Image (cartoon, rainbow over the protein chains, first blue to last red):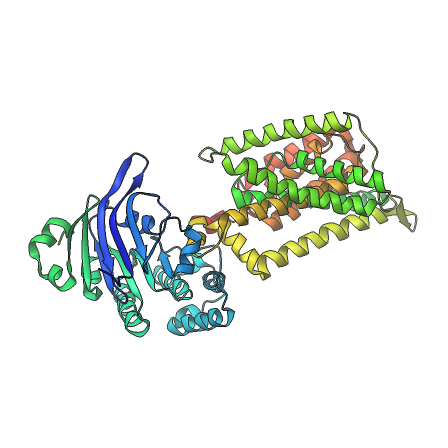
Length: 239
Length: 292
């Protein structure tokens, strides 16, 4: 499929001798939200960490925006337009809210736009604006998630790799974040590869769903189809 | 009372040197989670480089600058060539490699310069001013105050006010997240080692002339005191390093003045035991923030 933003073909990866991912194929179109679903240990987080280079791939090909991602250093990923918000929110807890956000824009040459993006994040998350000088560890779980998301947006990415944004959050906060992702997609054309255990939330905003089980893709389909597939839900998603 | 005032100023002057040296240890600890036991030997190597230049040119200041630059460079080399390849799965690995470096550096310096103390000149007089008959402090002490004070101010500004400082802190606290945000964590690590070794060589330049002179092992005792200072302050805390350095300096000065010089190593040990019993993380540890 040409024109895909992210094209993953036959990706294999793991830690040491034991592979965690086997021959994973998936595609993310520009402006598309793709949910990666599956139980604990299915390889969801490893998939994201392999895409961003934190875990070395053992085979397969990853193309972003038409160019191979192999050999791209982790620290150059943001320059290509990929923002990865890791599991556990990735807020640097020792730094303040403002420092965390500025950190997200330090690599940018366009200082004026980095500053503008920072102001936009504060507009988007007024509760962060009130806590600029708070250290990361003083924030609530929801605020940390907003901070990590906001920080990613300062790089004006084309693709967001988002790992378990609902982890440990109240349903109301999760719903808020999901709505926000949908709005962002509509407003800026941001594509999202969303890893979630919270299947209902993820499928409520996703266009496509990819179901991983023991490191293999068992199903790829429209999110609306997956939502209604009772057998699949029972077999792999546990509800 | 006169003696007390004199000992206090003497202790502060020594304490500032320990503070600078402890600061160097803390910088590397924060960046790499290694206690750099080679800090003393690296500083001595830098002092020898400065000493050679001063002897050849007759200019103390040229030697001073060369010593600091040698320190920076040694920091880069040690990180890039040695420490980067140490497996950090066990904290002892870094320590053992650092101790190996000490042997190599001290041996090499001994071959080049000989294992004798060689007197080093000071840029300012070490004769203390007297105010109302009480010896307070010398021009050289003032130089030490100014030099260490400048380093503390410069480092504080670097870490809190600049983009590089923000990158360095982020890289130390959360390497993976920092890389995902475009920070060259490896580069920040090298920079941290360079800065630390530069500060360490400054401490060496300041302290060596006040002792017996330069010798391959000249910094060993200073290292012990500075390490104690860093641990007392909390290895994670730059402010702790400075306060810890002053505490150790004052303690050593009072003990050697009122008791005996030979008791000072025990005094440092006693201080360590008391602090570690009361606050195992050091006086200024921020380990709470890390846990949360």
